[in-house]
Image (cartoon, rainbow, N blue to C red; front, side, top):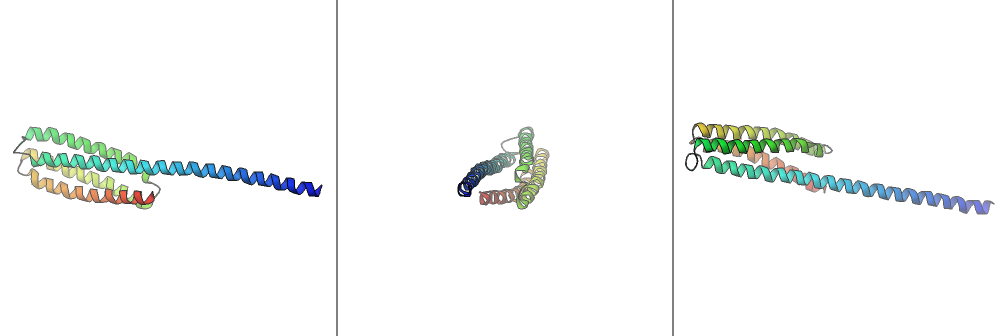
Length: 168
């Protein structure tokens, strides 16, 4: 009976190890799919925010550049308000997306700095538009200040994109 019990016991152990292996492989596969989906989501969100932010900044720059020559104060205010509203939407999207970057401390710090810098940029853009409405000659100099903030913001977003790409 010892001779038949040992192979049976070995077979039971082999089946148990095989089952554990299948379970582990399936679990690892699910983890990889979840990580890949999360990384794609992170890259997609930050790239979308950057693209939309750049488009919004370009439109605001064109608007402020044309102040006094091609457009009057009323048009500047109306179109400028749309740029500010769009920036607030992007700010909200970035705030919601920040949960995607909570695992990595470096990414978390960059996202926190991004949220702060978007608020600084928004205020600079509001000031540029308000001052442009009051005096269109001032619009260009105020735009220069908004550009400085935008450049800082762009550098932070590019750093986050770089980190996100390294994680993939």
